[in-house]
Length: 561
Image (cartoon, rainbow, N blue to C red; front, side, top):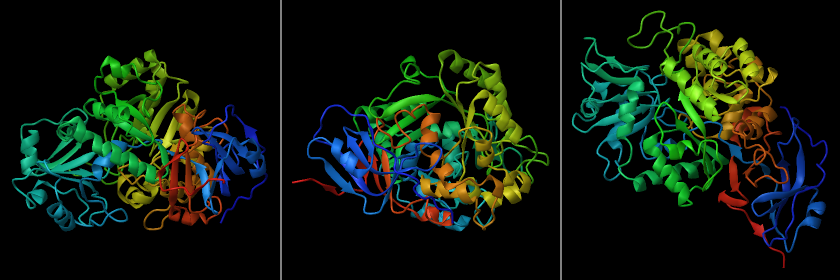
């Protein structure tokens, strides 16, 4: 077990002016500041008007507190800066909570198609929803090792439309009624960047669709009104807050979903900050384009544009340089995935972003996709603009070096080693590529500033499981994938705090406990720097504080007489 000892308490640092009746002093447990490249702790923190006014020794902080300062005793619990979601889909997290839950263990309990069918039959549709919607099935974890088909879902209902979404969000399966509703038939061609899987006749859709073929389907899921759309947004934000996240991300906002997100912000319904990324394969009105890269309004800001270059590595649609070991249904030997966007269009969008000085976030899983991003950044004037490469599952060492030169910063989907590590090793990537999946240690060594994310709702927004995966790289079978790519606990914490703030240009406001920054904080029931690294995922969030106020859990505040 690696442990960290407090080298020295940081001296008092003060950034404060006017007196306030709201002064709050927090002390009584480890306070890990995440300020600097080595672990440091302070004894106490003074919060004033939603910001950190001072840190240091308790006696010194008390001297600069104004009025009758209130206090919170941590009672041995550990406090860190609030977690920052480097990539996720907050709205979909809320929507997922209202769907039939089809996830396999350890998230859910669906292990075969019969259990999936039972879950769909038992699903209680929300009032006014004219179809059955499920989320989270995983062909790699089902006993049958395949996607449920039209026939499987027709056995649940031949008349009620049924749609089930793959855990990756890159596939879905539909019954006959849903196929008819969407308009997918034998004569429907595969869309650019997507596939409609067929039955043995080579024409009849078997119910399973990939990538861009989902777009018309997902449009049908847009709630009928702004009011109905706001509820899952607020639900998602609350789920994030319960996981210690004080800045979330809605990582691919479509035009049809923007209105509700903006309205939730205007109504003051967002308990945490939310960074929205607009899906730039779509056209956006000028009033939204003008907000890209601007500040927060009602806890919401449009952080940049999102583009998707390829698909899912566990689904074997990631765009690779070399073939997958075992091709998926309907594909021949030598299959290596495919791009999800026309490269001419992709480069046009990058050029547009460069001209407008917008930050770019790009979904890249395969190494061929990573190279297309590298080439695109170089050709379109984005070098040095802090482009964020999302996922980077199969990025190679030489590509990391190119990313460093161009200021393309990686955000790794580090939980893949746990949830799909064995599948990657045996089916989707092979042992060599699986051992280098999410190469966080190499990225750090290259001088990059990586982050890690859960891509929720692909996996739950459990930031401590994410930290555990970054440190241990242990699969569900117990195999350690790429032991040399494991990183220390403090590095893993940096990836979900200060590095995550830096990647979105908010590190002057967030990511560490320092005077002048927002009082965005999380309380844990143990110290991640001192527990056995194998037990990091067992730590729990006790409370989440946004701008000095609890948005999850509660704080026992003492007021002096």
